[in-house]
Image (cartoon, rainbow, N blue to C red; front, side, top):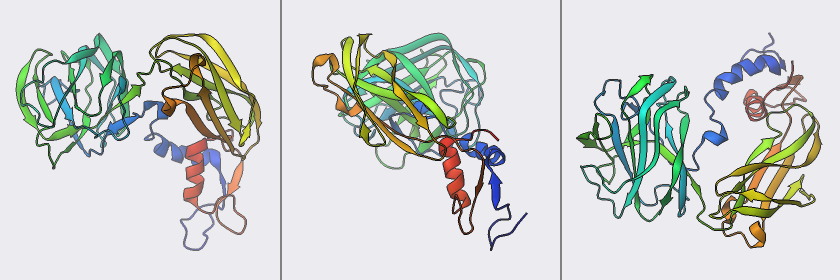
Amino acid sequence: MERRGTAIPMSRRLNFAALFSLVLLIAATTQLLAQTPSYSVSGGTGGNAIPFNPNGSMSSFSRWQGFYMPGQFTGAYAGNITHVYFRVYTASNQPLTTYTNLKISLGQLSGTTYPTTWHTGMTQAFFQASYTVPATNAGNWFVIQLQTPFPYNPANSLVIEVCSDGTTTGGITISTFSNSSPPNLTRVYGGSGCSGTVAGSSQTRTDFGFDLASPNFNDAGLSALLSPVNFCAGNYDIQVKLMNFGKQNLTSTTIKWTYDGVPESDYSWSGNLAPLSETTITLGSKNFAAGVNHPFKAWTHMPNNVPDTGVFNDTLKANLKPALSGTFTIGGATPNYATFAAAVADLVANGVCGP
């Protein structure tokens, strides 16, 4: 092993397949973009069993309501909440957990004075007699898709309720923090079950987030890049996910896109997408050389042949670069990477391909 100055001892020429095993420790705590809420309140360093670990130390507390202030979800707009997210405790991985009669309800109230009793007038958005949350790494989010989207007004406080009749396996500790500034109450809790009475209230705030869909009638957007993702050098189709964010069926739209900053031919789509439905679009194919980054941008235009009323979700951007393969140098006179940190960052971003 060669020492270079005062750097950590390591070979100057490093095989990235070997490095990949080290980076897995980093990547394991990096949540996929699809599993990260669009709008969230987070930052908790503590952990709490309520309400997702009703079989734990607080077994009688399987019902919880959390209160979140107007404007607390930065950038959120008036729209329909379609998915809710909770972040697991940052200190430990959480096991696969199956809940019995899991129910999620949402509501809103004006002002920031919250009751010490259950807030009434809640709208049920999700219920499943048996629902399983996959095992989740420490600090990552898990997501639940609502069966009934909830209309959200960012000018009012948001109330979310989670309750269940307990778990048949596992139990999840949720990431929380103590709210030291007004409001002086951010949750009420009790149980057991969804009809349980209030047992207490506190300033403990749960890390929580959500996704929104536009309430606009004609609103198409690109929700994800499907291909290429974590890919080796070579020729690949460029595929995106087209989503109908609007209130009425989407029957046509144009997708414009650029590659390496150069406009490509428009893609004209026609079909029949119900609200909140998605379909896969293949825009074209490109050859990707090793080590070369290709800026990519695509956006929807004129859904149903009318101007889009929700342009915030139209555009998808990505830097398309093949995964790393071969032997690279770190440091020295003519390095591929000046520092170990730069090499790890590129590896985390693009992955590894081959030995």
